[in-house]
Length: 107
Figure 1 (cartoon, rainbow, N blue to C red):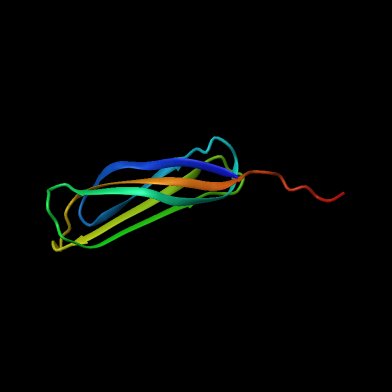
Figure 2: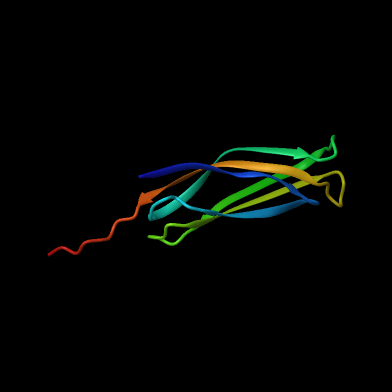
């Protein structure tokens, strides 16, 4: 089994939301990689806002046996301002997978 903690650093998102894509280097070849959210931090840039809806989507794209993967994190906030206000957001994650192994054929 493979476990690795990581995170999406705090970044400013203009308007209602945005996506951040980062390359992950597990340090070894892995199979069946999954990501779990471990925490998040969201702050409006200009003070008080009334949040109607907050959405976060976290996913990983990886090819079995590869030593790198892409982490995709989408943040979306809807508030009383229809045009959307800029906000800061960060996310902590845990990667879960299996160390890569070559399948062996029975002899």
